[in-house]
Image (cartoon, rainbow, N blue to C red):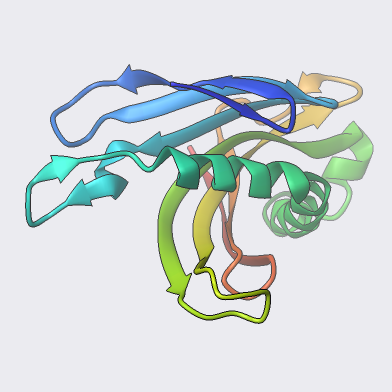
Amino acid sequence: MQLIINDLEFNFKKSAVKEFDTEWASTVHYNKYELGFTFNESLFLDKQSNTIVIDWELIEEFASHVLQNLETIQLKGSLVLEELYRQVFGEESLFRDKGYFLVGGIELKSFRKKLFEKNLLGDFPLIRYYFEYEIYYFLESDIHGMLDPYHSYFARFSNHNNLNIIGVSRIG
């Protein structure tokens, strides 16, 4: 499915296909970032009819939300992950290696769609989307290229009440 969001072309394609567990993915270049957006189509499973109907308008809203908040996501996630890294490897390791975290992957984990029948702007209904998503970070180094290549770092964000981090992790 092709979407144009903020003048960027997103081409979502099935990347891992299983019944009711298919992942969709698209990669875009935005400023200094190469961003991989993913979601699992099971998020859109209608349990009553046992069918999946992807809400592409919601995917468009999600991608737009991430792009609009990308610098804040980069800053907040980096600060928390730097502290996590210092706790694991010591105070000087990131500084010594000139290491930094860089946003790479974005995965929509859950959403809620709320319809407001009446609003202050007029009589038409207003839809508000609430997202939870994981941002995957690369640990880069100005000296060594990539640091800690066998582990992944991610921060889980929510826009339910502004833009909040609700967890971070180092896995691998």
